[in-house]
Each structure stands twice: as C-alpha cells, then as structure tokens.
Length: 453
Image (cartoon, rainbow, N blue to C red):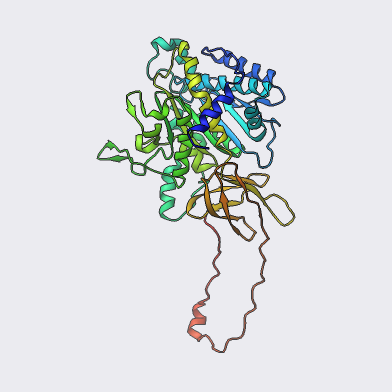
C-alpha cells in the first residue's frame, strides 16, 4: 500500500464510532482518577502500576494495555509512551490520557485495528514523568505560564539532562572497538540522578521495551538519536552536527511514520522553524547531553524518539480537541511500528530459552539481547540480513533472512553448547630448550579468549 494511503486508511478505521472525550487539563488527582476510570471500564485488558514516586511523593503511574495485563507473553513486543517529562510541556500528558480513553472505548466497541493492536502488543502509557513540575506550571495556568516555569522537577533539575552520560562512553568505546550496546553504568550513577530518573531507569531495566516515544512541547517535529554530538562545542560555540546512530535510516523511518500521520508536522514549517519531512536528528538541531532518548538506545534494547508536539507548551483547553485530532492517528500508527523487522526465540538444544543472548546484524554495529524468556525483537527495515545469535557457553549461529514491509519475520535460533576440550597433552619435542631459556622460565601463558564487555 502506498505510504500516503496508510494514514488515510488507518484514520478512517479510527473514525468508526469514535467516542466523545472530555478535553480538559488534568491536575494530579484528576489524572489519577482518569487512569483508574479507564481501568475500571476495561478491567480485562488494562492494569495500573506505579514505577516509583516523585520528589514530593506523587506516584509515577503507568497504564498498561494487553490481553494478559501484567504478563509478558513470548514474542509479544513491549511498547511505551512517556509524557510530561518537562512539567510545563503538558500537551503530551493530555494526549496520553485521551489515547488511554480512546483505546479502551474502541476495544469495547470491537474496533478490529485497536483489538488487534492490544492483543498483539503490550502497551505501557505513562502520562506524567514529572507530576511535581506540572503542578507548579498548572498553578499559573496556560495564560500566564512562563516559558520555564515548572519545567524542572521539585529539586530544580531538568530530567532530560539527568540520565547517565553513556554517549561519551560510547564514543570512546567505539575508538577502542568496545561494546556497542548495553553500555554499563558508572559505579556511582544512583547518587547522580533524581528520584524520577532513577524510577525510569529501573523501569526500563525491568521490561524488555522495543520501541518508545517521549512527548514534549515547544516545537513541532519528530526528533531521533543521537541527541548528543561527539564534539559538542567548537571555540565555545554550540555545534550542530548530524550525529547518526548505526540505525539511522530506521530511525528516520520511525520519525516519518509519526510526522506523516500527524495532520501538519510533515509540512516542515512550524513554530518559526523548518524541518524537512517534519523530522530531525537531535544533534543536528542542537546537542543535548544526558538525555533519555540516547540513554534508551545505549543502555537497553529500546529504540526511542522524542516527539515535540506543539508550539505552545501549555496550550489552552479550547485547543486540546484540535491537537488530539491532529495526533490521534499518529499515536496509533507509531505503536504499530513495533511490529517490523525480525523476532524469535533463542533456545538451547532442550528448547529452554536463553536470556541475554546477543543478536548481531551484519553491517549494523548495534546489537540487542534476548529477554528473560529467550525471546528477542530486532527492528529492521525491509531487506536481506545476515544475523548471528551468540551466548556464553554456546556455539554462535548465523542465518540469512529477508524482512518484508509488513509483519516481522520469525527467526528462531537453537544454539548448541560449546564442546569443552581437555588441555592437550604435551608431546615430546625433537628439540630441547637450552638451559638459559629454562632458567628464565620462558613459558608463554595461555590467554583467555572472549568478548570484551
């Protein structure tokens, strides 16, 4: 199907029986009530859980949609949306509440597209990562809200500059041929992050997320990694340099999926800025250190983009319905992008899943790993690929596969255990070491072979 037809067909499917929704700004207590109302209306496909608390003790709630809430089903990908990371950028918060109500209502109505999405995907929606900052911004309201009022958390910290800086480690690691994924955290990282950041890091470490977006405001563009350039400053001036990931073409496609399904993002001219196709590489726009987007890519299996959704960070209530209609199809279409590339099980000869197996794609220097049950998900563009699965104690296995434009290809790996060989007995040699060598004990030590972590 032509690219321009897909958003149109999807939008028509969503228009069938669309429910009337309330378009209001929600303070913390109202947000909590809205989430629990959705859960009560769709109890068999939703679950509410908290990943932690903010500085001022507010819960960081997540609403999950799944046909088996609370359970990871093998080969079913995990997806997440995070809103309101900056407390005064509120449109994402309201859109995620609207999306939650919409998914529930359309599921109850029997909408085939939404039903299939919930049955085939485990969707996690966090409307607000910074509820404390929101309350500060909301006290002033949309009419008198300062550009930075409520942006930070209660400790005055910008949460999107608060994640461990793995980019610097990655750039160094690349020079020495070190690891290109799951870069280890610094020893003292917990003492350097805020409670909200800590909760998110522990959250994304506990779930094998595949695809994600975090929702912001102040511009209209889909921003993709890397956010941080390798050389941030030149002669004290901020440097804007396109800094692509090894998955750059894939990230561009993901960003375009949202921008072209959005009512006007793809046009490029918004808020006085121009972005071709409504997308941008983060560092090409401006270099950002310690951001959540890059952290997801470098520390987990998750591919995350940042969605800037409105010129006005705190739009008035009368604009919320128009913004919802502009973003509704895009929000659904982006979730569907989690179903592309390859996925499968990595198991041993007894069909036991192997957790932590490394999945490498030839020509793309960024690996992912299998989850606790041995299932893996590798987002890829259509094409032919050579893929290798490897795990400690097993012989690696390499296959060639073709990825189509629709559903992901199933590629399973059954690994054989490595054969442990006994040290070879020394054979008598026809030549003798001279006494001088023996006295110096020139005996080469065996080196340990393996992959540097």
